[in-house]
Every structure is written in C-alpha cells, then in structure tokens.
Length: 130
Image 1 (cartoon, rainbow, N blue to C red):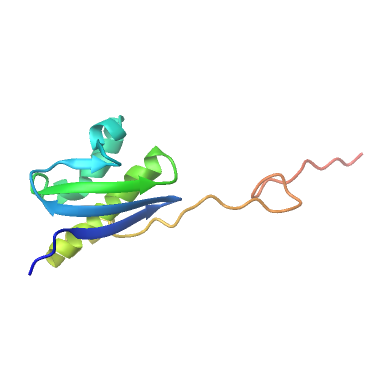
Image 2: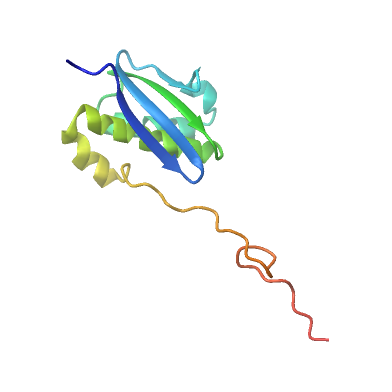
C-alpha cells in the first residue's frame, strides 16, 4: 500500500517548513497561497524550485508547505530544504545530486545571542579613558 504523501521538514535560521509531496501536476502552495504570490521576489521563487529543477521533477508533484518563523529569505531556504528531504522519501537515488548541490545540509547559521555587559553579541560599550 502506497502512502498518500511524502513528508520532509526543512529549517533555516528560525524558519521551519513542513512539506508534503503528492503525486500531481506541479502546483506548489505555501501557507495556502501559490508560491509565486507568497514569495514575490523572483530569486526566492527560484530558490523554491531549485531541487525540483535539479532532479527533473518540476511538473510531477503537487507540493503543500506550511512555513513559519524567520523572514522571507530564510523561509524560502527552509522550503527548499523541506522539498529536498521529501524528494528523498520518494526516490532515494536522488540523494547524490541533492547532496552535491548542498540542498540536504541544514544551514546551522543563526543570529548570535546578546551577551551581558556588552552592547550586542560581540560589540562592546565604548571605552572612555578620561
């Protein structure tokens, strides 16, 4: 018995994308909107499509994504990560291409916390000699 959908979780900074792949015609919905409406910048739309274009599966799946947290760029990269992980569940042979492109690696860079006794994470208060 086949599954109804394949699932993948993508993360970037504080953004989390829960991604479901269904067999379909190529429609991508992000938080209930077409991804072109949710991500108005062409560069972010390209980021979302990258794993599908790389694996030549652009028109084969309907994708539904719930994404929360972070900004637009972080959310787009989280969606890319989630789609890549879900594609692995569909076909494990895609792993080599996705890994080489760096789409399976979780980008762990986050904002560093502010430290006490300092103005910011690394910036100190100005020192006055006199």
